[in-house]
Image 1 (tube, rainbow, N blue to C red):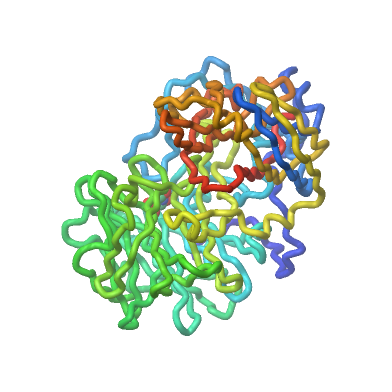
Image 2 (spheres, protein in one colour):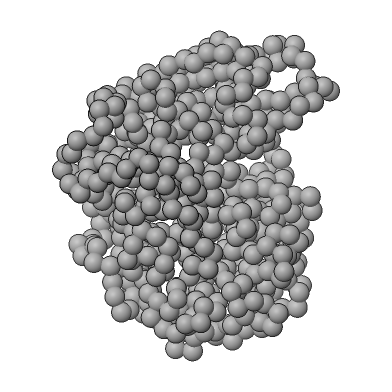
Length: 594
Ligand code: DQQ
């Protein structure tokens, strides 16, 4: 390829040499505002257990300490700059400038915060995937190949804002420790000169790997292109060839030139052809087109679509995969049969959230039918109620599991990204399985490898939190925590409470500030010592006049930062809790201002 990121010339096959992420900014100590300096002195962590008006018992909390990768918080930049506090966050850039802009309507016109480079440096995470610098968005073609997990991602090699999109590339043995490799593909042909956009990997029957990806052409038309490894025997897949006959697909009749993107991994049809789907829209109806191919060079567009949902708008980054109703393991994308359900996931361009639904796939017609049309794709379930977009699964044939990657674009402003020199991270990869108990949703859990980061542990048993109280749990000094907590609500008190018909919602019921009899209760994270900054992660149980209970799981960011130019959403959803199930929480935590 024409150019490479000059980042990692010292690559070694030994993963033990893998280094954790380093802060980007250099470490010259500079003056900080007095208040921040005071807070930074202590590196101990106090978890705070909070309750509503009804007491809860924290049955147990296991807190596992992470490795001290970097003392990110103690570093700062010699290029320290301050912006005047009265500066206003510039207006969002327009849709015409691209499809993956970092826009937060609520930030428009907000007062810009005086971020120091020191503060920005400690915002880098220690165990989520991030490139060393610049902008990153969607996960692309994750795949396990010859002993290595490969992760590709949408990447701007030239800056911390979306643009010049190329495919960044990293490899790992364990999905946690990564080595950055040279950029895999850059925009260098007329058919992708405006961006090497999102695509997926397919492993063919003979073990060969092919990638289909969207190119934005010299006229900003979205086309599909084929690429493959220059040397299939190279386990690191460093060099990529773009098929000389590209583009292999152009928008079909009736589909807008800018509404045809993000091909999925292909699966085998009963006729032995490869089939895949591509998101699009017709007017306001989100759709997913289906193509068959034998060679990934010529294609047949199937009549009808995989699925369509009126009112959902453009479907980006569609994902389609089987889940087993009976087994514990994940399934290869081509698996089908009586014990199998299929999930369709779409990333809705209109609201920038990932939605999925479970249903039945007919391999003959190429159509999928939702189990419950009331919670169809784009109008029902989400994987995640925080910032999580453009996700994609892959089948890990080594560990027989399906793994989900998702892009987290953060809550700060584009101006802050430019100052940081980087933007975005990827969520910890999660295994994804069908929830056999409810039969109506999937279950996500951080991949087991993340547990290898734990080096110490502290257990708290039967901690009681009285109504309306906050209880400290001192976990000593650390920079990373993996918190698992289980709560027990006093059932007798619960039954005594009169139900009401007031509806509760994480987003509109005043967050953790609204104290009800049945919540909120949970854990305060990311607090500073005097609780002026805090992020409650909590449950809230609502009871209606007939005595029916509903459990909500929410996160309230409204007091999470003193900064004025970050989006401080309160979000969450109802969670199914079956009879006899405990309320448990897992939080992967990094030390911030303590
Ligand atoms: N990002 C890519 C597109 C995709 C969008 C461009 C989703 O292919 O639709 O960077 O974030």
